Image (cartoon, rainbow, N blue to C red):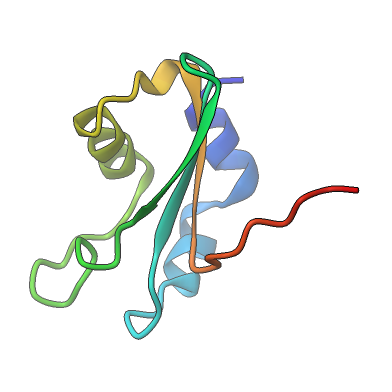
Length: 88
């Protein structure tokens, strides 16, 4: 599954816009199959009222590319939850 499909399954654009609260931190969680690692980026400083950045799929993928990820080999999501829940 490519990252765009994963994004579409997790959020549609309206859900993401409803979820954004600039008083809370925003994160991008990434599962990168190139190196087998999971990453968490704090992006709330990028998505603020001053620069009007709206973390849509295209701009998130541009951010991840800039962070060194090959987004065609990643699954990612944007959330305001900082915790990772581990399955039993």
